[in-house]
Length: 152
Image 1 (cartoon, rainbow, N blue to C red):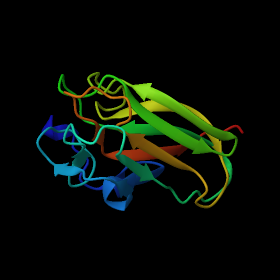
Image 2: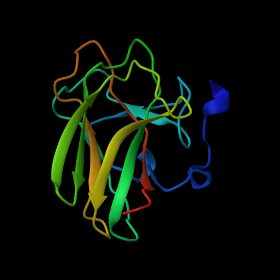
Image 3: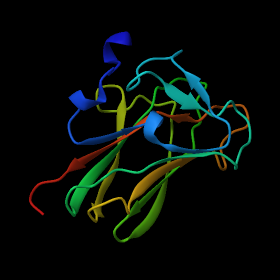
């Protein structure tokens, strides 16, 4: 899986916010144990503090428009099957639960969450939390990618 590690997020299309630029609530563990990942590694919740931890990724959106939101995470059987991901976009908020045991469909690293309208600036965000996840599974937070959708 090492060939799928993306060491330089600037080589990815769109706007990418890595965990190093995210806002953390609670104690998260930094790791490089299980590739693939973006940048230097990823975060996990240590299977602790369930319901009290989150990682918020806030992009700088250059122009208002529709963006596909993709989340990066490594995957295996030790991951949560119901990780909540909240997307704040121009029309409100939506929370999607994802299975981090399943292989993401884009380069084995990024999972699409859908297309959303975002205003320019830093008004939107994506938040991964460990609320309602299994006590014996970890939640992964790595990076979020925003890809502008043409034909708006």
